[in-house]
Amino acid sequence: MRNAALDHHFNEEKYQLCRSRMIIYSVFLAIFLSVGIFLCHNLVKRIDVAPIKYCDSGSVDYRVYLKENEFYSEAFLPKGMSYPTTAIDYIEFNYNYIFNIDDLTNMDFDYEILGDLIIENNTTKVTALKNTYTLVDHKSKQLKGSNEIVINEKFKVDYTEYNTFANKYRTTYGVDANSYLKVYMKIKRNTIDGSKYTLDSGKDTIILNQVNIPLSERQIEMKIDTQNNKTCEELKFSDKQYINYTNLSFALLCVAISLYLIKKIRYTYKRMLRRRSIYDQYINKLLKEYDRLIVVTKTLIDFRKYNIIKVPEFEELLDVRDNLKVPINYYCYVKHYKGILYIKNEDDIYALFLSSEMLEKDK
Image 1 (cartoon, rainbow, N blue to C red):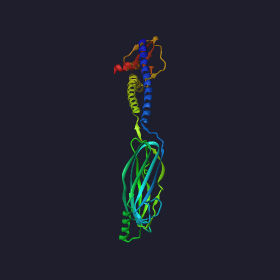
Image 2: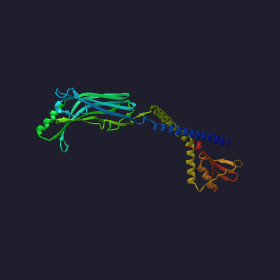
Image 3: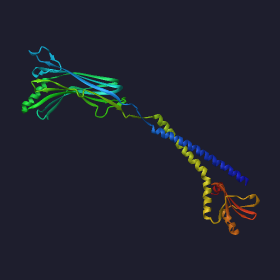
């Protein structure tokens, strides 16, 4: 009995050691899983940049150059006057555009200057003809690491050419039409690689410095539309993201350690319960099949006062019970691990000692 007790004590220590290891593994698993999940949620980072203000403005100046005549001594007339069309040789324009932003950024500016020759019904103002001409070919400028860009373009418009076309149209079709040449600058802006910002969709293309030059008139006055020549908007934060590779590396490390800990927990759990599971299966089966014959007791008699007769199998204990007509007692030394089935008959005790080791060995 002393050796059995020592054996039980030794195995119980091993069980408790496995149980402690499982708790430690579980704690570390929870820690590494939590850290891994946190890092995974922070794998993708966004550039935290607040919107910034920008302003763009346009201005236009022109001179009307004259043909040789006896009335004007000047070679040209300045902006804002009334001009006799037969005296006009050409018109010189100076278009100016300034873009200013509160922070350094990178942007492309693609621009051109166009002229729309429009002929419309004099009464209803419905367009009858629209031809678009390129007055200044497409050009590009780049804002890089700066906060201001300036575009200046000087060009000439051959007034006689467009006026002659409009007069021919009216004469050919005999219509009472209103005609004019609309001159304007078209600018397309786009943020480029390295920029922290992006333009709102729909605000990347602007029309500036619009001038309407009347055609088919004896005397003309040019009108400048300055409504859209100055605006202030915001460049919004561009939704750019990038992977934090440091977090990714540590997240993968946490996953690897977590998988290792899960493997260790499963192995330790199986090792801890393997023997006890065999014992429980055996005892539960006996208690279920021989419920009327077995009495579960919570107290154990003093075996030192009796003559102990060990039986090797439960079937032999059943034979003793059938002969003596007394119940079989069951007492559990260690839950899930070790117990005894016995029959007391006067000074004798017929005993079947059970343990996980014994059952596993028999198996």
